[in-house]
Length: 275
Image 1 (cartoon, rainbow, N blue to C red):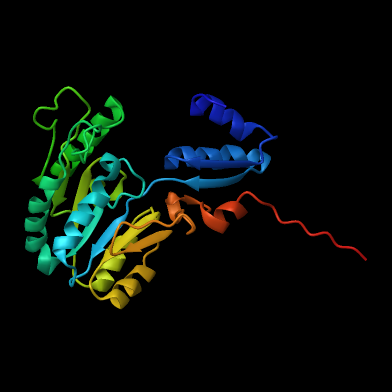
Image 2 (image 1 turned 120 degrees about the vertical axis):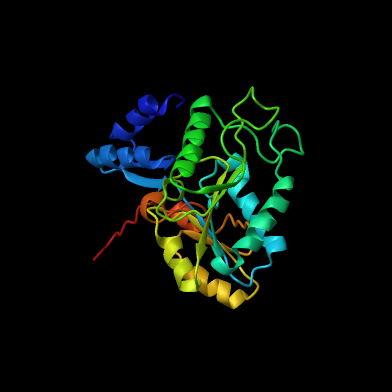
C-alpha cells in the first residue's frame, strides 16, 4: 500500500486484520499508533527520535575524535535519528575542542549531494529548513554561542533548502537545542566535570536510541558506555552491525530491529500440550 500516513497508515493501524505495525518516524506519530492500535491489540515495533550523546573522555585523541564527532552529527545532513547531536566534552579540554572543530569543519562542505566532495546537502523540504532555522535562532536566544555556522543559507547556496552546518558551544543540557531533536546539521557542545557527570548528562533526556563514547582507555570507555541508557552505544567510531539489535529506550521507541531480536518481534509464541 502506498499513500499518506494519515490515510493509508491510519487504516493499517485501525484494521483488525493487521496484527503487527512496524514504524520508523516521529515520537508523536508513534504515540498515535500505540494509542489507536490498542483498540485491536496491535503488536508494535517503533523506532522513533533521538538526541544522541557523544562523550569525549578526557584521554580522547582529538585529531581522530573531533572529525568523527562531526561526521556523526552531520550524517545525512543531520537528518538521521542516530546523529550524535550532543557532544559532551571535559570542561578542561573545551578550548582544545573548539580549535579542533574549527580546523575539522573544512572537511564538511555544503553543496549538491550529487557532488562527491559534498558532505552536507539540503534539508528535505522548505518546512524542515525553516524548522532548523527556528532552532538555531532559539539557541542564540537562550544564550548558546555560535562557534561556526548560524542562521541563513551558506554563501552561494541561497536557492535551495541548505543550512549552514552549525556548532553551538556554551550549551547547557536544559536548553531547547539540547533537549529536542532538530533533524538538521546542528551540534551542541556541552561540558562536563568527570565521568559520572558525563553519564548523568547523557542520560538526562527523554530519548535513548543511540550514544557514542571516545577514549584511548578501552576498558574505561566500555565502562562509561555500559551506564548510558540507549539501545546502542558505539565505542570509538561510527559503528554498525546488522546482526546487533537496534532500537531505543524511553521516547525513542518500542522493541528492536535486526538480527534474531528483529525476527522475534514478528512472531508469537504458542504451546501445544498433549496428554
